[in-house]
Length: 176
Image (cartoon, rainbow, N blue to C red):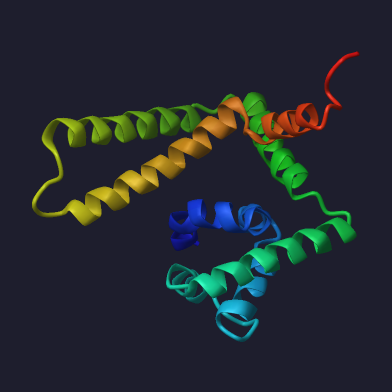
């Protein structure tokens, strides 16, 4: 699933419903849907699907968009709200953190934040190194993804803001 994290920005753009499902309990269904399209069979592993997605043609990416729309329709038909599942998952983690008052998540968040910005600062000051740049960029990408998760955990996601913006755009959130 780590390779999926690297492809997350692409997947979030072309298939947001599937990208959301990959982060939760419906990951298997999402991988199966992508496997059928990209590999021609439903039994592909997450690694196989990730590799195929990274090398997908524009036609395959357009087909992924269609599968995403079909997947979203199927989730709605089954009355499965992926955003609610994701929000409930974060909420239960937050409640557990409050109840246990565990210092480990705070320490990990602090170390990840310091590491992420230290690497960014180092790159800005020193530029890209002649050797090891691939490893450095991979570490930066992983820290960036982790940092995004940390911000989402502590401060919430933009899903609520997006819903508010959609309501306002439709004229439903304006007081009359």
